[in-house]
Length: 244
Image (cartoon, rainbow, N blue to C red; front, side):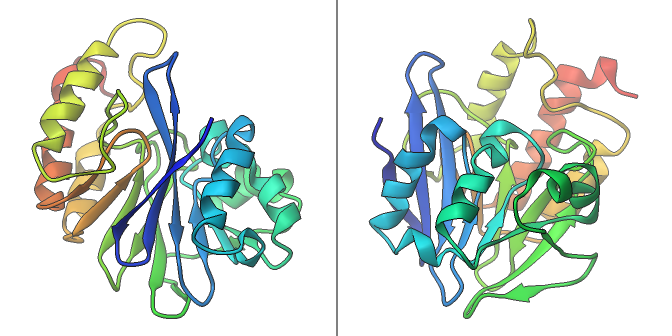
């Protein structure tokens, strides 16, 4: 499987593998900077493909930071493989992520970003935002790049299919179609709806991101704040009857 590589914003590259059987894309995101950052390590089975994609942009061994939302194979399954080839790389996560999983799992101790703390990688500035159970998991967090206003939003606004790298249309509507199909069966309620879901999404929308780096399906450029608010209403409609 060969990863596709697309520059979806200046120095931001989407590195994507498509699983034909699942009709589903898995994306990692590379920020090219003095201290390069990789967001989502992706599945262990995709490690070589993602690495080869990264190598078309920069030397994989130069990766300095490895971030992800929550402890799940497509988020961080190949974390230790990346740490092995990038001797100066450090995992980057929230306090809960470090305490519950990453501190034990990772071959190198994580850099924990506390609330309001930021790191600069050269021309980019990042902060971790704790978003418990959004998209899912107690340890969930998202990464916001403040200089270009990019939200690395993991499973939020996910879509199926082998779609384009960057979309400027109704991404919430496209995501609603996919999430509605997923509303029944063993994969239902993958993004839970609780009393905290809407406030968390509103807080993310208030960041006024210009780009949403979505793990599954197209990334998005446009009124990202409104897209996040619309996604909250979609979750409410699909899963609200089960909300806590």
